[in-house]
Amino acid sequence: MKKIIFILLLFIAFKADAQQGADTTKKKVNVADTLKKDLFTAPDTVRHLHGKFRSLIPPMAMIGYGIGSFYIHPLRHFDHYVYDEAVEHDIITKSHLENYFQYAPVVLVYGLNLVGVHGKNTFVDRTLIYAMAQGMLTLSLFGVKNATHRLRPNGADRLSFASGHTGNAFAGAEFMSQELSEKSVAYSIIGYTFATTTGIMRIYHQDHWFSDVVAGAGFGILSTKGAYLLYPYIRNAFSKEKKEKNNDIPIELKKNKQTKSAILMPSYQDGAVGFQFAMQL
Image (tube, rainbow, N blue to C red; front, side, top):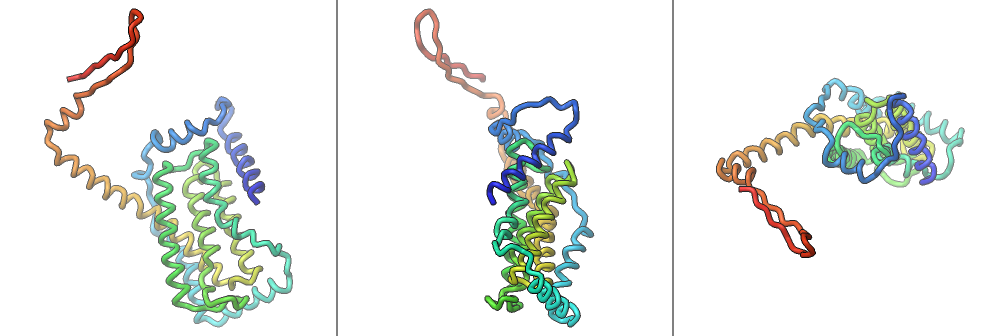
């Protein structure tokens, strides 16, 4: 599985590099320079993030579909129909590859960054955004699983609704789409392909009903979209607080801090070894 992801990563990186244009000079990827640029010198894009609340409607509708399966009989009957079809046409491998596929979009985002394909945000900002998305997803899934007590198709436990694997996969797919779709729509397609495959395999392995998977996907997408909407406000609030604290520093101290500097350097002159000290007042 690791080999498959590695090969896919190299293929995607090659395709992305090919789209840069004929005027792009070929150069070796320096991981250290890439990390330095991403961590310290990349432009602040968070303040330019913008999202539309109507983009939350599709994932909310998916969650609504899942909830509706508890009350609307045709939806529940469709769950059993899909289950019967999955059992009859057992074409999916017995290996639980979805345990790996659910993380593939996120791994690809950071892996592509290492080979020079940068996302929309810096390493720190996108990591905090993803952590926020995962926090919201974990809390929401923990709540609904323990509130609904739906029995899994395989009878293992009563934590079927909603699918955690699918939620995690679609959260990662949306994360990949948010970060890289402006470079190429192929990144969105790849991320959502991994996520959809994860959901299908959860059904075929009889771990979840169809409505569990649909709702899980909705929770995953909603969590990531919500994180991208909220993070700029949260970070700006902390930045404002830091700026206000900085304004409390007396002007004289600020000037001293800005104008005074000192440096101590080793020296060698006329066969003598020593040090040179310089201070700017």
